[in-house]
Image (cartoon, rainbow, N blue to C red; front, side):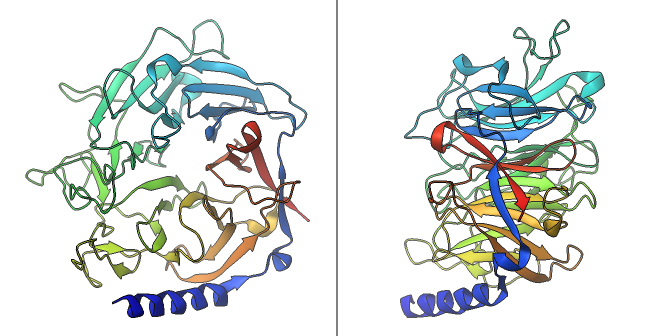
Length: 399
């Protein structure tokens, strides 16, 4: 079994290098977007969509910061401080404030949403609604929180945590399989639990007994025993999902277990295979139990890479900015462990891969930068963050 595994790794490594295109051909590099600004553990970067030109950055420690989009900015303001109610520990660093999304009609509603590990219960994720202050557009109302969903987690890792609004106006929520390793709770293939799934809820209406509504078009609303909030399932630990602002195509990067990191195009009701599959391959448990080969009911990723290349994918976005037009239409993403960053060129309709361009990812000091997250401003410019050097924010540039 080991020799076969090593052989497969060698084959995929060769395929990876074959489709890779040198960064020199793209003419793209990275630079510090706000050289004088630092925010501790910048876990989400986004905008309000209200024409204000403000950038919002959530810290994993539990606060949300704002600043004007100006390369000379030196200091952010605290928009919302939730740190007392958020649990974060360096040795359990997949908890904390993990998700942050502004309502798509924020200018009128003033609402935003957080996914965080609550301090009032052990290993418990909460998704809540908050709102801006009536008196100050640069401050949130500190007295208001409406809890939408509470998810007890069996372990501290694999919480997922991304929040994103889709083109349909619904809120999508990524939940990991609950943690440890290998999905010991078998949550990935279990529709009766929220873990291991991407949820879709309607935050503008309320069903009886809920602070949200379940869209009637959700795929498992009429499936006996299934959680109706589930939109797609079979995920290990989605670390960042996003929607292409031009086409609406739904991307999710799933962090691998033993050998494979993957990028998926998410479809309604799709089963993405974990823990029967890891990437395009059967998953083999620690006890030697082999998962599944290709099946019609299991959706394989559009792209994968092996653990010789990197070991923890940081999902990104389709680039629609102006600073590096060579990247237009490409899915930019990174690997947290190896510190590598790429732009995946593909046909979103067929999923066919054209090239995987590696982009130089070096700081001024010459070290690779582990990327925590990607985000966009209102104009579609893409930013990405690291916890190094106090929490720095980068962007792409044309050489």
